[in-house]
Length: 295
Image (tube, rainbow, N blue to C red; front, top):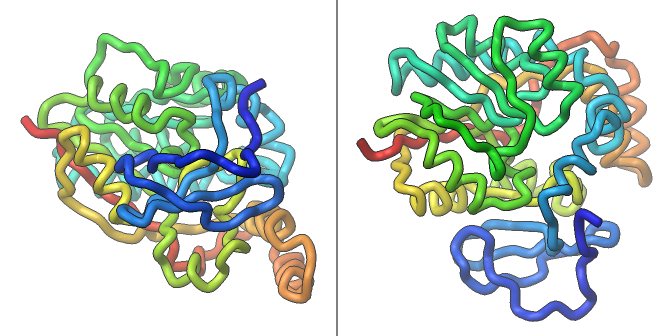
């Protein structure tokens, strides 16, 4: 088993970020989501082990729809564009160098980083995605999780684009990241924002509440609190020019709004969007932050 279901009467549970006391925030399906009153971090009330990544991020996650994707490979162009965008942002802080893209999947973001002038490597738990990345692009993609990654290399930058909420061991992952970051190196992290207007309005229907594939939900405060524990200083933040393909939009709407009047209207509208269309992401709930390791 990779996890233990939320208990009905839990003992006190400390925040995964700051260690303060937490309270149950709300329940979605059979899972409880807890929230820290100190740093605002939210996390799943679930005990997970190393096998969580293998079990959840199987091939079905990338091609089966639901909480994952109908066809991850259809996102190629938008993700390469994302890599180019973040490659440019990184160069504000580090002129050039080596980058490790964590949660690289099929290597599309990594390819965009390479197009922006970075010498990149990837890290991805799904073997099929690793094989695809290494076959299609002139890059080196390693199979595994950041928590268990062992490398003699150190990098000028580490990108974590929509991957931190999936870490089964948050502190273990950031410990590994700090160890392989050069002094003066930069982390660039993209996350969904629990304090955004979109998240606040949608509440428990917010599309990012997708346990057990998602284990953590951050605000700008909580990610800063977490990174600071590893000697990382905030040096930049902003909102990306995020775009989404029609197929992924429809899959997300179908999964998160499967019933009710709102769901019926949303599904009817998104069905009109062709799978291959790429549209601007309409929400305000995504942000990026950059941190520098002390030299």
